Length: 168
Image (cartoon, rainbow, N blue to C red):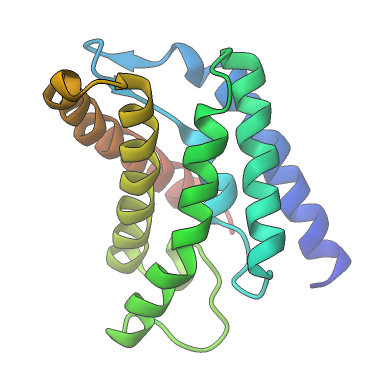
């Protein structure tokens, strides 16, 4: 990675985390759909980053969000699991013929459909983990499932819109 790529990643991290903590935190639809736009920090990391560096980055991002949300590691756990599953999703999509060569995770490089599939799958993994940890009860599985699906769609569409209007 070049210095320019590293600075670009750091800038995006600061931007997405600031947006999440200051603005998007209060963005809730019908008390069901929550927007966790900070997951884009992990989704947009370069593919050539090692798994351990990706997991460490995911943990740091999750802990920062946990600090401001007062959630005691729930976001960190969900973000680390999403980062752990990410290489498998990338390999699966590459095997299906979605993309090849040096993978740059953006809507402009991957195409709308491939990028949407990538974002939805990993966002679902994150939200599934987060809301099941939050529910902490088998009887709350159905309400948690509604939150998972609605929040996955809301977050994915938000990330797609931001990517669509960005210049990368």
